[in-house]
Image (tube, rainbow, N blue to C red; front, side):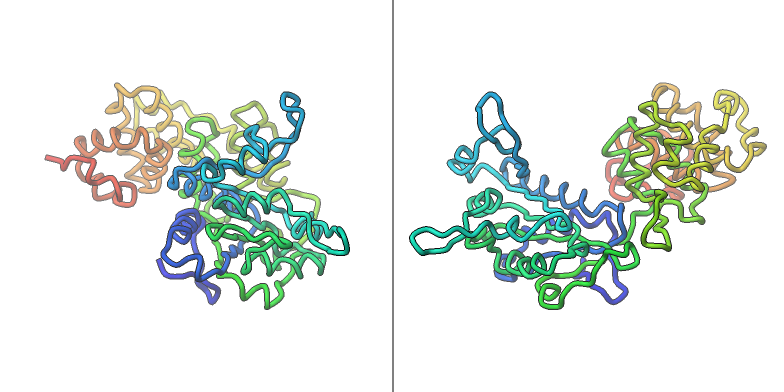
Length: 402
């Protein structure tokens, strides 16, 4: 993958985590020194990808992922770091840990980044900060989120030292610390600010695009299994031309929510947990889209009747047709011994729109997909040619059709 910077080139959000991992383990990274700055619309998954990348790096290094969050332990009668360990305990075995610190730069003041100056015997120095001491002792990632939301000039002034020098106050980080930042674009909010050039030049700047609907659905399946409302995927595919997956408002401020991959994730989880009312979905994706989504969820399709008489698929209303691939995938998951019974209906769906077949395969999830495809290709080898975008990466696991 080439380096990705401004100038019309953008990285897909699905590539971001692997890019961070590849960069972290690249030869000569500490000598190159720059940080990574990811810029994109709100709610597309930038922060989540940094967190996931940090966990995967820790696992690859064989170290324990430790997010710097402090809480009071009534058992130890002291403040402890996430996981219940005291600072001395972590420092005594620093080689065991991979430290992850997540700062929201819009909410902090300079002393949160540099420490508090103290004077003793006429000498002024900074009391070292807990998070900085941990990064000094162990490898990790320092994540500076909401970089473009900084309003205080004194915070701007301190940030460059963190990125390139990797020093907080007078505390130097481990050479194995990677600094990553994330921010939004000017059109995403009135408080979004352009970045001062001296700070900007300490980063490799990477523009991030929103996931596609299919990529979002695949990620949801991998992360949540069957614990999300898959009809959300059907709705987004049905209205893909309207761009409902991500609709950043034209005005930078308001009082009504709007659709993003993040809000669709929350809505999909809400529904399966009993919060699928009109007020619930509108509260996450806005009233206009929310009303349309709620009406879509109310569509009633008799799947058993379609399985008995696949030709009836052609008579369904257009919106209802988009619900069927999701329902059929659920039926296959619940009836693994009757998979062949789904094929005639799949033929009817595929005959009208190839998209319906792709939707069903993605909705099955990777755990069930391999067995399903083996049986589908044995039923009709033509599907193997039609589903190359689905089978990429797993062809070697599927025996050639005879």
